[in-house]
Length: 182
Image 1 (tube, one colour):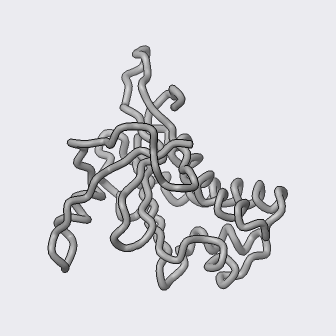
Image 2 (image 1 turned 180 degrees about the horizontal axis):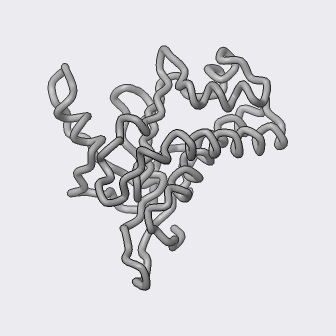
Image 3 (image 1 turned 90 degrees about the vertical axis):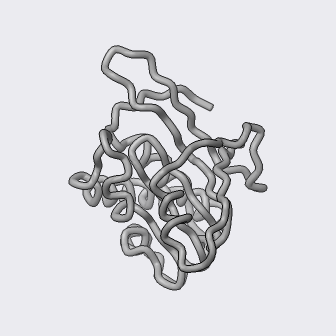
């Protein structure tokens, strides 16, 4: 866990999301370091531009669906665009990234779910802080086994949980939030 400033700038959230996706490219070994760096910068620029009019630190749930990165039977177009900038086809991205991934990039929190019914795991979390106040936040990196040394994050209702519980066509399920760390 690291302490970071959380003033709603979107930079730490985008950095966490981009780093998470880039790890998949690096782990599979088909992409060299230069390509990973280019992918990082490209995706960071694409997301910053895409989110600049859809970022509401005072109302983090507003625009959440717009900022959701989704890979399932269809590649997320922003991830596809960054991949193409380093010479990867959509098919190659499907081989390198999880086939079923949802990544929420919201003010003060970035979380993900692998699989349609997987647990929601937090990558980055912070609290908004007024100017001049000390900052409390945490950054986690996913471990290989998806487990955490940190306690479960409970009593935390977010926009994505509301969508998961209220927006499902199938019966509601209780979803636990967990923080993952290396």
